[in-house]
Amino acid sequence: MKKFIGIYDYTVILTYLSLCSSVVGISLAFNGHSFFALICLMLSGLFDMFDGKVARTKKRNQREINYGIQIDSLADIIAFGVLPICIGFSLGIKSWYYLPICIAFTLGALIRLAYFNVNEEEVSKTTAGRSTSFIGLPTTSVALILPLVYMFKNWTNEYFQYIYTLALLIISVLFVLNANFIKKPTNKKMIWLIVVGILEVILILGIKAWLT
Image (cartoon, rainbow, N blue to C red; front, side, top):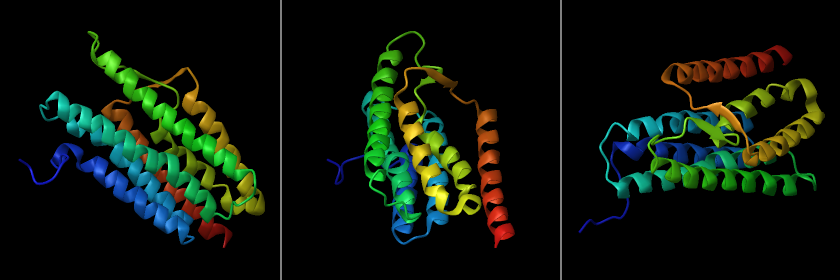
């Protein structure tokens, strides 16, 4: 009998790292370090992008596969459903309308993740084995969308809170929209997504340095 429940091999390490990064990000956000919290969001997105590919390199039994699916979604709701809201608070967004949008955003992410799990389980029983496209905006996408929005922070000043709040509202709708958004990225596209993330960080730092 094992001393501890759960799985601790390399197939889940990236999911665990994603959760750790998001918790650090939440802590940084509550201490007013919005930029570094945003970096943690992007790191969680990077870990989440590759966790499935790493897991599939090992032959797993059905229990291990189900465990991986569940912890991936549980980690994602923290990283991409809660951390973005905390970043908003760190940016000083405390207006009355922010709370209902926070609820809509987190609820949208939760529904999207639950639907994804159910859909993947149904597809896995068919000859296709895995779906090739995403229904609804993937929650991981906020790791690139919100840094793009963040670029406008130093240009818009006090109006940025409205831009960020509107972005969360739009994303919350896209999470649950019944539409095929994008195909699941290939290895080549993943590399391009990483390049885009790096460029976003460079641009944010460049804009900040230019305006100060």
